Amino acid sequence: MYLLPPEASEAEFRELLSYWQSKLVPGRLPGRQHIDPTELQPRHLSQVLLLDVVDGAPPKARRRYRFRLAGTGFAAIAGRDVTGLHYDEIGAPERSLPVIRALDLIVERKAPVFLSGCLSVPSQDYVWVKRLGLPLAHDGHNVDMILAVWLAERRSLADLARNEPEREAGTPQVLERR
Image (cartoon, rainbow, N blue to C red; front, side, top):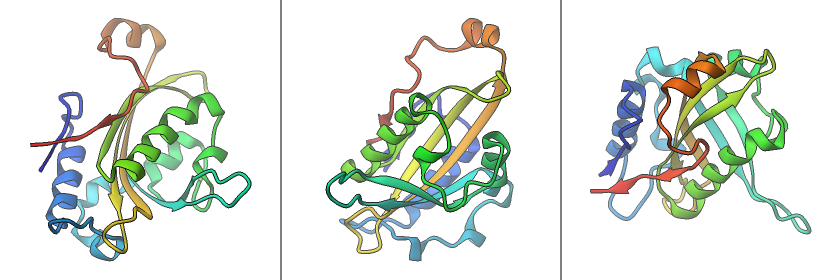
């Protein structure tokens, strides 16, 4: 079983990780076909994301992540419905790069990844964001989708400076197995 880091204490993270782990079979990852939205906590659905892993074609050969589903909570912070867009199309590169690194880690390590950090939004408010991404593989081995939960809290820059842990924002953490 995978362990969440201490800063991922919210019920949404525990419940989605527990649900995903209930779908694991030894030596195989669950696929999208194993995920039933009716089994997820309804109160969390607005924070759920489902991303397609899109392998790049030469000459770029850059992996991208397309929103198959984005809950209304994510759309509210993004300022629009992002369904069908790629992650690198919804914000400035400096804002999306830590998330793309975390998504790459999910694909490469075939393991859950947690990421937290400060996100600047167009209103010039700041939002502290925590994300948990879980790998899905239709064939049980090659990650082709990512199931995620995304939690945001609006805070002023002064509040962030005073109250947040000194941990560097934007550093993805691959979850450890116990």
